[in-house]
Length: 238
Image (cartoon, rainbow, N blue to C red; front, side, top):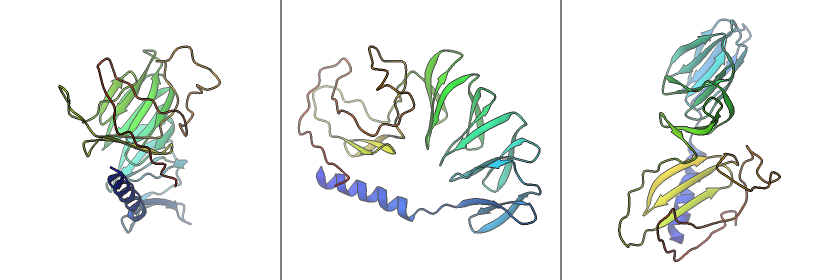
């Protein structure tokens, strides 16, 4: 397992080093808004945008007339006229607010997540938020909205008595990867403190929105008998 651990970690860091950013954006001296897309410059606006941000596959921006638009795959998609007041972009997602309503854009499609989002966090492929309308924490992932605080993995179900190899790679507060019997079954980024499924907690410790950088390691079963063996911990910083 130790050799596998090192191989997976090396592969991850190697990928991050050689992956280039295919998109960029700038304004020229003629006040045009220009995107740099895979080696080509494209003028997409004749007037300076009020705000823009650059992601890995898309560039969201508010144009000079306050329309919210998204550049992706060589085209500009107009989302609305003057309703968006703030937005965030990551590698795969764009989350934006129209007043207190939280929306998400993914692969050219938009979806309303909550008419009143009181808290929110956007990662590379997930949006976590508190739905103020239904008073519940929810998560958006892969086109679906999940109620509660759990996300499904792609792992198989293991019946009967058998040993299962489980690995967990935690890169600080950036990326967490779950591996079952050699297959990656779940990934998420920027884990943080938050949620209402807790009782008798210390408010000085449970500060919602704080990224998890340290803590305790606990093993548990969800209502079924389980045994653990050969537990190994490798500190990746050494």
